[in-house]
Length: 138
Image (cartoon, rainbow, N blue to C red; front, side, top):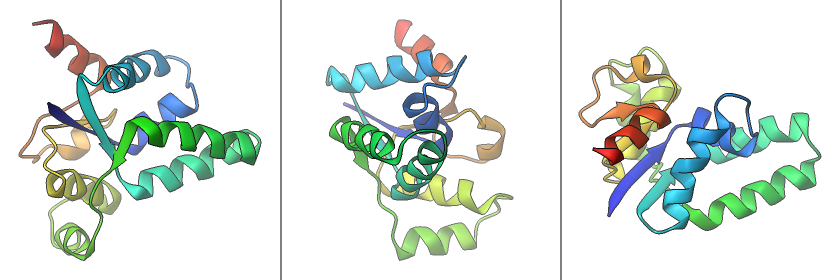
């Protein structure tokens, strides 16, 4: 089963039901709910998503969305080794480096993000949700 890493922006697109971005994210999560893929995100993505959601929604509602999301999404490895690799990487954005090395440590096959350019030296495929869904149709 393919292991898919969701970057923070995809998690927020889904949980925040962001206009123009929700639908492709929801389709990816539906595949996970149907047990066709396994999805992961980092613990920092979960906390960042909660923080942003609670700013725009009731905190209890935001927490309930996180609780339900956690039922279909596993957490990736975010340990000292991931941090060390991120610190010593050539990534311009430290948070992106953390996400990338967390996905690698978790043996993910693909990273789904809306910021593909930030992962230009990735050793695994990086694409947006719509592009990922297109690969499944081939």
